[in-house]
Length: 262
Image (cartoon, rainbow, N blue to C red):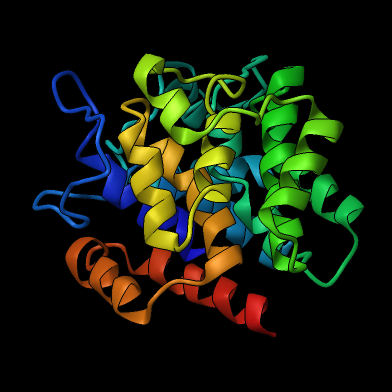
């Protein structure tokens, strides 16, 4: 889904020491914004599910092709492992790449969507919190694609996954800090989407928390996309500004959009 890619791109410039912000007032597409590992992994998962490819080698192939995109330490080693095995991770990478599981199953059952989420999560993030984060993200997107509103989605995610979604974005923001775990990222990202009035609004919420900005926005983005849609000029801007050297990401995202519309 383009929501994950654009969220990643917009949030990318607020990664790193001294770059984090605690405001929604910022230029949406800033100079030097870029796609990161979040976009690469989302595109890889899209191809895996669209073409029924083996998950681990396909994800490795995509990440090896897109080098130096901010891969975490354990995952960075996993990419080049001749015998890749899961490493009990509960990092938020499980959630930031999983949006395609909801999209390819939008006309199927939620159980099928969650099964696909588990399939692409199990190869690396096989900790219970890794599965929970990926499943909750998938479920939120799937519900939004069925026309579910914020109240319904909040209630279901709270009941089914035990996440606390009671705080508002304004309540989360002051004390929120950089966190790369699913349990410290997914509830906040979902809240950013559910409290939004547009796709852009959700991404601004996510970046304004001052945390793992690109990943928060990459998780909130596809939920908000399913709820509100994305302006075509925003997609065009992302392609022109940041993806001119990544035609493979553009191609698979366009295939995913066709699947979502079909």
